[in-house]
Image: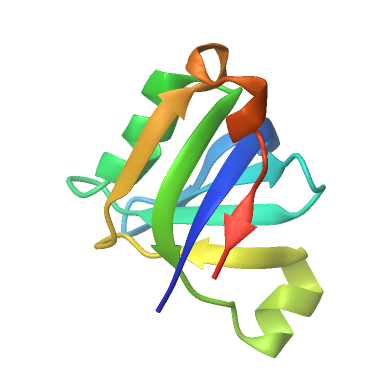
Length: 104
């Protein structure tokens, strides 16, 4: 797993989508990349954390790349799995010095 900080600036797909066992919240970063945050009914803490922080926000989380087929089909660049914790901060609380996005 990689760890990264992402500034989320918009929602894609209009919000939470999927089935109760396979929910996703797809967000757009300030670098115009898609981050899919996964969850399921009864296990959507990461999704709810981002929704509570609101768009615009910054998240610090572990991520992985989607499979090649899914990346091509859906345009996702990063996946945040359900069991990986997200820490978020509303963008209004972030100084301009902290606005860079890092992935590693």
